[in-house]
Length: 561
Image (cartoon, rainbow, N blue to C red; front, side, top):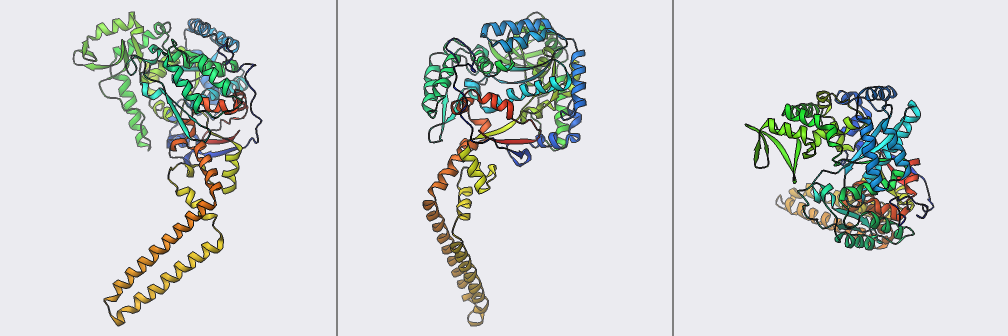
């Protein structure tokens, strides 16, 4: 970022490192245990689950219908355009983002929306992939359907799970994971992140990230961008919004901080409806979850019968439950009439939970499509009845792009040895040992195999004839065979160890590729911070991915940068 700007894609930022290849390898998501099986059915067998959703995103007709029903639903378009403009003014948003937000004043404008919790330092790679998918889809729909489409990033600013958002992981010079964690500010774990202020400790955390990053042409720029965005006195959600906006605002992404009190009166009726028909939202979601189970998929949300889909913002963010004499908030009981009146007069005292958040979002924005991750796809499959209950059109769901970014050295290694990337996930040495075995000289491998077969055959024959001499010796012969086979296996292990020493280069290549693809044993997109990739490739990585990141449903892409 420039010292006087929040924009991450500035003229002064270094250009993207010259790519050594542009390979994009698709992998069926059904191969991966970390991606829900529902994602495979959604992509390849949509009729199996289609009635739980608003339409098939692979169908052009479904998009046309989504546009039609979204435009027909009346929303507070001018009010939202004004709220967005005020947020952007405060954050000094790029002009392209402001121009996109101005379009929201028109009832003919529609949106492709995505969102994520406000996290420190922009969160893992998948957060960026969500935003990129929304921008790409908005462009595609605008071109194909001749309609104004804007991409929107909804910042979940009212969540309060600090541990989930406080850490950032990068790979150091030796491709070892380095994790930096922001110390909890006052109120962490109770207050929503929109009310948590960063203090001076954020500077030490950024120092730790800087120490962990491998030195590159982009290190100074990346660290400077972090310092300009995440700084003392800034609340966590606004810092996150500035970071995302700096990266993709120049491409027209609108960022919305959902905790903005100016927006709450626009959805007060939804809060009143939820409290007036207590338990209805939970029951509808539970019934859809049971239906999801009958189709072989685990529900993402299992609401309790007494659950309300709202939190009360009384200092802390506290769940609201139904009680025998009204509602229970923490240790207090409030009459239904009193809480409904509060929701009508003071909607800022309320916050939607996961079952109502999408309804609130799509009553504020003209959402034709939401871009979810695999887990979100599951809970959104429980909400069609909830959308109908509140009379809000349910948008299409187009799962975000899922990808692993690797360098050319890792790509050559994987291709040369034909390794499927999922074989790199276990953090033991099984895959490495198997690879090293395949590299043993054929003469050694054949000789070991021949000896094993000969020993087994000869000793088996001896075991069979031994009873003719003395039946009691048969057991001793079997024991001897076991010891011999054990010793041969030990010899084989020593051969493998010798191969490991000889093939130290191969071991380093394996470890380096493994660290990129599965840092700490977890998928890259869920683990490594966006800052790691900006440090390696510069801000023009955004342009590269906007041009080259495929959106094909049902595929994970291994992309060589």
